Length: 320
Image 1: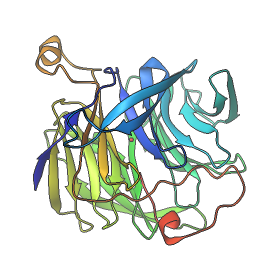
Image 2: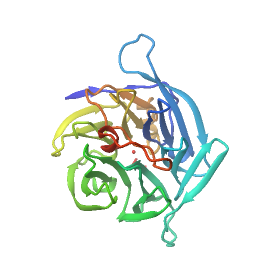
Image 3: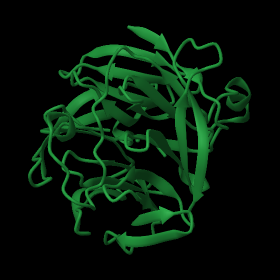
């Protein structure tokens, strides 16, 4: 199955990434990593009322450091994986560093990249080296009490987090390997085990951010290929979404019914010739893929939330 995504109104970003839907505010959050920005927007009907919705930009928060990903919190604020730390954002004027992993003191400059909340509201976030030094990154878990646990070491570009509908499988991409792997995941403890290959992207691109739908299919943004590729739970090709930008960085199911796929793209790393050929690079794109996404839980920093089937089986952002 093949389909085509259409561009949205917000202006292009440099390294646009990490889309996530906040159902309480009914708004979309996304980041521009190297511009240090977190954007908010809402879905609106296009002028002629046909096709998938557009995104209307609403506000931007600018941080003092690169921001790899953002997530809404139970308490109503935001948490960002920014620089090499986790930052709490109450509003445009208030940010507090709440935790930071112990980064090796080896002279390699690192930053946070993709991040996503697990079925119990813990935040998983990965790092990478600015110069993409092989094996310099890690994957961490931020618990609600502020504790940070290292889940993986020797990662090059930590990306692509998402969970199966029952919460017992974690999909993960180290982009440099050109494949998505799957782990057994313990929802109670947040521990990972049993890493094995899930699906490869081949020589024409690298897996970046991903999202999981209610049927357990995994939708993977493929950096360099101008596509989002969907795979069945057994790793077989299911669908391809064509995007008019080669550097496709992430995707997420959004909207009241989680039936709209929003796709982020980037201009970073494009040659002058590519930039001329891809005037919409760096924009958000959308399509209706005929699938419904799993809800992404907020970071569990507030009162305990009721656990329902739709709230306990979840998911969800260049090589960046």
